[in-house]
Length: 358
Image 1 (cartoon, helix red, strand yellow):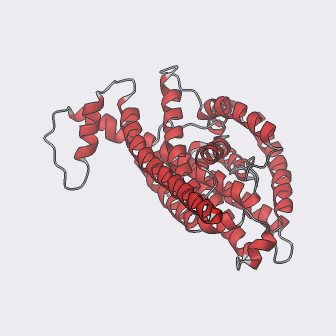
Image 2 (spheres, rainbow, N blue to C red):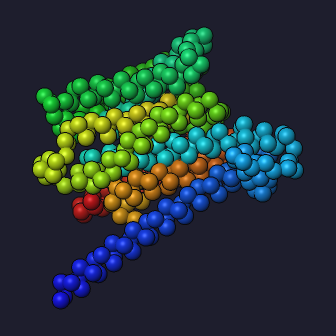
Image 3 (cartoon, rainbow, N blue to C red):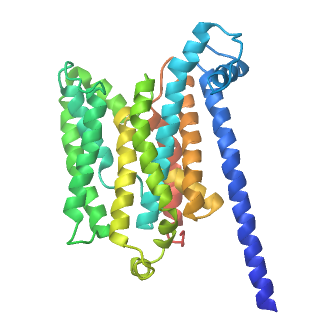
């Protein structure tokens, strides 16, 4: 009889946690929409929140409101501020879920999306793009984002080839190869930055991260990569839960561990590379967001991943709002703000590292 009562209590507790997580997901979705409207309203030309909401609602399918706003106001909202807000949300979501994926695969809360050389590869590609003649502009994408994306992908492929042992991909070897390649690429980047002359300021500003000048074409270029990568990761959420066991135990449960690791690493790296290619390397988001979500809502990746997406999007939109308003008209690089928020949290994680987190 006591066993039955205990089992019933456990089931009730699971259902209660599940209900809380579902309610939290719905609440975060609503909060994200509200924050998008607020961020689009705030700027050098303040616009009433009600007007912004009306303009946005008017663009929904099957909705046709009678305009009570100037065309110039609609242009500011739809063509200047909204692309920046949406891109910030996409990048925040991408870095957060990529961080959650790396932490789940490596079973380490200190892992982040730049662990295997993505950031340094993107930085090297971007610096090369800055140093090339201005006439270089291929495919309409812009030379700097294109070279940054290529650099990130190439760096990841090199790390993968260096760390692969036969048909296996040892995690320790992967991390060590990533650290070694990052150090090598970082030294090359440092030399090129020193030699960049009058382009030094632009390069440093890019490397610290910024959403300044974001346009819809950038959103449309980044969106497919992030959407596909996120979809792949979310599909494998249950297997990420299994991976919290030992790899041998996961194999005994029928998981093809090596293929699984390659698929998730590729998806997480793809969305990270797409994100940094346009906005630069933004640190700490991939660490603090997944771990904060894990502390609040638990480590079940079926909920951890979508919650990380929403919290990451909200966090990045708010961070970008701070960056462009606190010292307006001067912008603070996003990387500065995320470092201010993330560094203390990272130190907190280091102190907790002795405890069992997963």
